[in-house]
Amino acid sequence: MILSVGHTAIDHIFRVPRFPKPDSSIYIEDYKRLYGGGAANVAANIASLGMESSLLSLVGQDFQEYGYEKHLEKIGVNTEHMKILEGKTSNAFVYTDEKDSQITYFYWGASKKFPEQNVPENIDKYDIIHLAPSDPTYNKKIAEKAKYLSFDPGQDLPVYTKKDLKTILKNTDILFSNIHEIKKIKTKTDLTFNEIKKQVETVVVTNEDEGSTIYNEKTIKIPPVPVKAVDPTGAGDAYRAGFLTAIQKGYDLETTGKIASTVASFTVEKIGCQTNLPTWKQTIKRYNKTFNKKPKKK
Image (cartoon, rainbow, N blue to C red; front, side, top):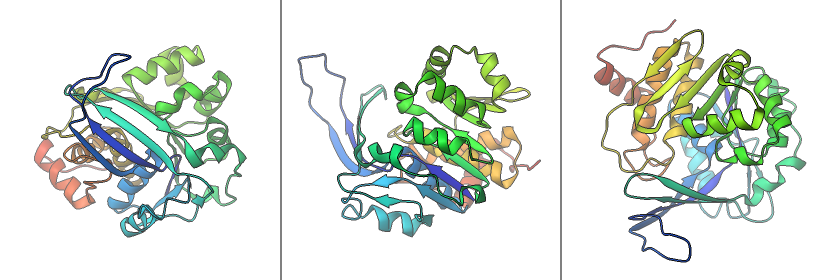
């Protein structure tokens, strides 16, 4: 079983021709309100891939009004660790320009209450716990009790203290980061990349449309799966879900990375993080077509 911990959010996705300068404006070409949040995106993808998936998240009283709860239950996400609190659910406002560059504004809402929460007593029943972007204090509590930990600080990296970030990294088995975030992690922790690799068994660095690189005992380059991309929002979360699912199923790291890249390719074909969730059968079919061979387990 895989538990995803962190934000569940309502995504407001905007398409703009370019980003305006300060004290100016720009028109919006398109706008959609969809289901999102880093932890929820990962949990939804894992469930769609047929793996047992649970979500630990805090949401507001508008969570059910949006139909989000029914959506997750329909996909097969276990929501026993979700709490509905007074106030609003987290909201993300994502602006994407014609170059697919993004600027995101995030309203924490109910997620602000994470520091007050206790770690579930049965947390050790999960084979993998994935820490998505969320409150560093709570993530530290989870990290210290997880059997096998996956960590993605993501857009919440600025709120981590040096101490909390280093503590979580010491307990991390898989670190996910993009090329911009890994630089910030090095700066905040005063660790070199080699020092991070010595602490963390597997480090995965994504590089937008250039694919990803897996650092373990050796360095493995993973190419992107070519598709007609419509919107990049949520591709990283889909990649992480595919990666963790493949690890759980027992695939080697190169195959795991290629499966992760394949899962991410479905997300970018549609607008929204959970609009085009692939099944395991669909993923393997595209994998076989892309790499001209069936995925091989260890």
